[in-house]
Length: 171
Image 1 (cartoon, helix red, strand yellow):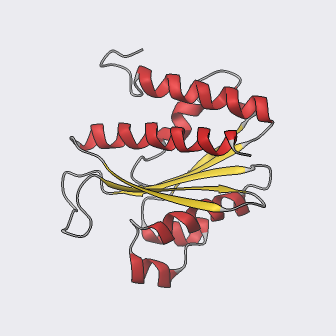
Image 2 (tube, one colour):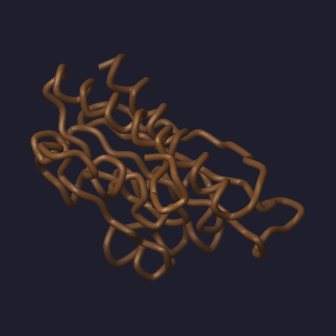
């Protein structure tokens, strides 16, 4: 862990293991919906043997058409707000819960990892997150990370895991 041959760093794996323990203690199952992180949150959670007791899996919906087809993100949401927005990640998280009846919590991520693709309104490093709880509310969170593409993605995975931990602790 932690050397350059590891796809997921030691800090992310530590955070993922903490989330798995919280999920087990609370009897909650999770599903992920990822865009800019490309499945890294699900990858970190499923790194550990036995994680299937609380991890359902994840959806990687990188394109807008996949966000619509798989998670039910509305076309008007994408047209009005874009893929990197509170509205889109909220619909992604809620769509993941709809698609996975056994999960109680979902986390969704959409952002601009770079190096290109940014604008004045949506700079490289901007990432939107949402956590949704079945029969509960959906919370969006905005962060702007610095660094190269790999660093932005790693920070996004860590932040997503932190948000999940907070939601589990408040169930």
